[in-house]
Length: 484
Picture 1 (cartoon, rainbow, N blue to C red):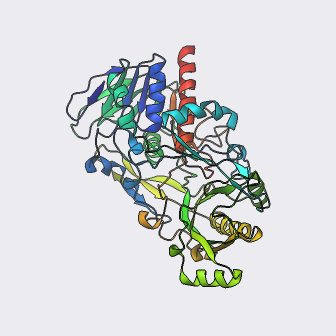
Picture 2 (cartoon, rainbow, N blue to C red):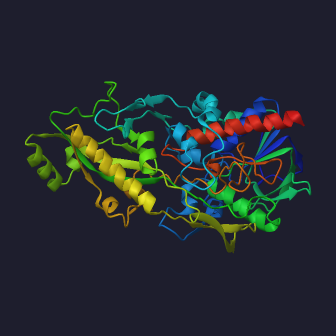
Picture 3 (cartoon, rainbow, N blue to C red):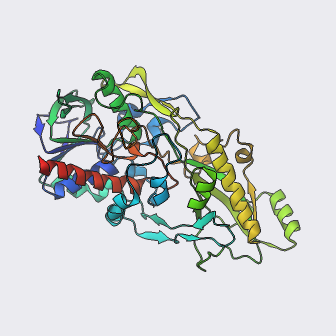
């Protein structure tokens, strides 16, 4: 059942689980718990369709590296940001989860074995139907590069459409639209007892009582709500020293322009003799030896017309043979965790009295080195294999402004604004906002879903991992509910 608070009055609700947010994470968790027979309420701040007035609640201030506007990177509506998702999928690599060298307190409190059982179910939920390439080492890459498999939901699955019948017809599910979680009710014993739900459109509201509560509103919004509630509830909600810190985004950039030569196949073969599509990535060996972030390279263009004249001339003269192909090489790379890259609050409030977000996104020399070394390593690979040449982006080589054009979508291929961190997992309350089950350390029954809990980001697009974590979180909630 769907209830729109913009047109209907709200009444107190009591369920087993209340989920704030009807995007990928929230829908995944809710539908899994509904299928297990639990009563679930989804509280979605947006409506059934896009609304500029609703979208304005995401507005905030960027004070660090120039970035995409906060109110443009996520969609406040049923189905959340799946409504503009590109459909690219890949799980985090085992080394991403096991890596201990990037931040104090070590790596993730979970391993690949904790997420792998949910891979196939997550791929099915996301409508993954296309798989390209395989994870195999590249010949002539000195063990530093590998071809990788990428997966795609084609066309990208829209949760509002795909799961519309479930939203409307599941007998033990109620979806409230235009319903924002304005506050939480806390007991002295450290339990959340209720969500205070309000509608900005109608100024009506109700109390949603439950046994377990999940925040699935997206990284920036999850952090914003937790920061607001921490202020309001004497820092009883989350670790105030860590909350909002270690904010990350994947770095997307044109890494350079390449040419292939006449004795090279359009796409270089792997050591296994396979012919992958143009998806390459750093290896565990490379990351161990350099301490840099993971990266992924790809190119769809094999047309010499995109090359500048000088590069074509120099490459032709150097090889004394014809240029057979070329194009732009794009990179998506990991941002190294940085405590000074963070989300805080402004004094300005929205129409429901919640303070708005200030995003101070910071990158450091390690991030710039990752971009630069990725370009140099791929260039060396082309030379070693006598496959071609790469002209690395001058901004990347200079290191001063490797994100030039980042905030302009048209100039930053793949700039989806992947938002990660701020409520990162930790093995102890001192080095994490949430525990290994995505539960906030100080509270018994409040969980955070989505990329806010990421401790590191790897190079993989986060949606598949978000879905895996959501399925695992639902299992944990169900286990606790069964235990009473």
